[in-house]
Length: 616
Image (cartoon, one colour):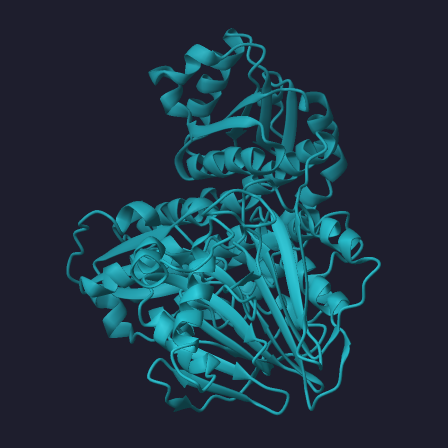
C-alpha cells in the first residue's frame, strides 16, 4: 500500500524531474492508492510541489503547464489510513516552516502521544499520522544551530512506534535525500546518472538493475556524489549493490490489455520457472535448496504450520492436502492476522511456512516473528528477492513468478502451489514415498504447463460465458477435497475485481445453510472433475439444479454425463487429483477477469485494494 519514488541527480545539474517521478509512480500504482503528490528542489534551494486526489492522471493534468526543473525530488501515492482522501492529507507533508518535506509509507501508531508531548505549539494542516513525523523531525532540527537532517530523523525515529518507509528532504540541506525503513520496504537504485529510492524495484528498472534492499533500522543518505547507509546509532554500514533479475520488458503489458490477463497467460512458463532445477525425474526426488536444512533435520519435522493471507492462504490450504497426502505430514493453515494476535501453540519440531507474494505482507511478517519467538523453525515462500520475509526467515524459497503487477494474484498463486508440491515430494521421498511414486508425481507435474495452455486456449469460450452472467450480483463457488480451496480462490477473484458478491465453500456445506439462497438469480460455479469425490459433487450439482440454480461446471475432458446437468461447461485436461487445482483455478481466473472487463471495472487496480499490504 502506498508508494514512494525519489530521484537525485549525480554530480549536480538540473532537469525536469516531474516525468521521471510520475513514471515511477505509475509503476507503483498496483500497490493501491487514492491520491498522489510530488516535490522537487531546484538549484536555488526552492521547492516546487503539486498534489492531487484520485488517479495519477489527475496529478499529470495539474502539471501539464509546469516544468519541475530541479536537482532532486520525491513523490508518493497515498492509500488513506489516517484521515480522508483530501489534498491536505496527500503526501508530501511538511513541517511548520514548509522547509522539511517528507513522504511516508506505514503507520505511526503513537502519533497522538508524540503530538501531545512534543508538538503542542506546532501548526498542523492534515489529519495524518505522517505529518506528525515531519514536525517531530523539525522539533529536533531546530534544537541546535547545526542543521543535521539525518541526525534529527534518527532522534525522531527512536521515539516512533509503528512502521515506516520514509524519504525526507530539507531546503536547508538541498542536496540530500534521507531515507529510513522499518517494516515497509525501500530499495536503492544506483544508476549511471542518478541515485533513486523506491518502495520496490519496478520503478528502478528503466534506470538501473543495480539495487540495495534496505534493512529494518537502516538510514540511507543520498547526495549527488554518493550514498551512505547508517544504523539508528548513526554508525556507518558497508553495503554493495546487487543485480536484480527482472528486466523492464517483464514489467510491461506485452501487448495485453491488462496485466492480469498477461499474467494468467504467463502461467505455463512461470510454472516451469518455479520448478527449474528443483526436480530430478530419474530419481523421483525434489530439492529446495533454500530450506537450509539437512535431510536429517527435515526428517525430524513432525508438523507444518502454513501462515498466509488472501490468495496465499488459499494456496496454503491446497498445500495442506498435498503435504498430508504425499508427505504424511500433519499440516495446519492459519490466517496470519489471527495467528499473531492469539497465543498460538507451536509444538516441538514444527516448521512454520509463511507465504507472501511480495514478501512484505505485514500480518504474515508479524506471524513469522511470533512463530520464531515460540521456537518454531521458519521459512518463507515469496516472489520478491530481497524482501523482508525472505530476509527475516533466513531460509525459504523464491517462486520465480516474475513481476506480478495486477493486484489480483494469478501466476504467483499457481507458483506458490507448485513450491508446496515440490516440498511435499521432497519430504515424502525422505521418509516413506517409493521411487516409482516419486517418478510418477514428477512426470505428472511436468505435464501441467501444456495442460494449462490448453485451458488458456479456451479464453474466448470463457469470455462468452462471462458475457452471459455479467449482470448477476451473487455467485456461489463450490468444490470438494483438494478443490474446495479453489472454490474459495475463485470467489475471491470475482469479488476482488468484478465487485460481485461471491461465496466459496466446500460443497458439502451447502445443505448446512447456504442452499437456502439458491435460485435462478444466484449462479453456481462448481468443480466437478473426475476424481475420488466425483459422485459426491454430482449429487451437489443435482441438488442445485433441482432448485433452479444456474450451473457453470468445470469438468474433465470427455465427461458428457455431467454436461447434461450444466447451463455452461468448461473442460480441463485430465490430471491426477492432487495436481488438479493447478488447472481448475485457471478458468476461474479467466472468468473473473472477463466479468470485470465486461462490467467496466479497473481490472489491475481494483478499488480499496493494494498489491502489497504493508500495514495492518
